[in-house]
Image 1: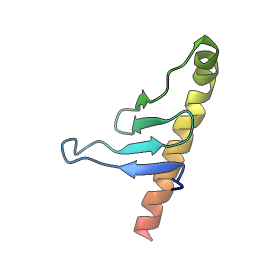
Image 2 (image 1 turned 90 degrees about the vertical axis):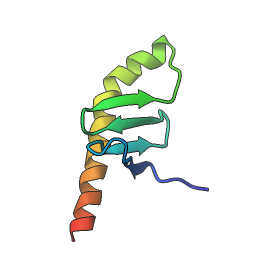
Image 3 (image 1 turned 45 degrees about the horizontal axis):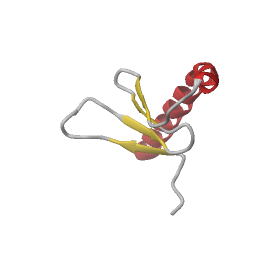
Length: 75
């Protein structure tokens, strides 16, 4: 099965939270309510440094995906 790069998720136990799941490396979930990120990968020191520089880009991509999805619902 081929998964999309981003998946939109929600949960009734957390009604204000909006989750974006990133399915490609590095896999993570971001809660757009508070920008909290949960990583599914283990990182070594080399990866950690690269991750720190790319995190802002990943968050922007996730936010752009959400904005696009919401726009499509509104159309």
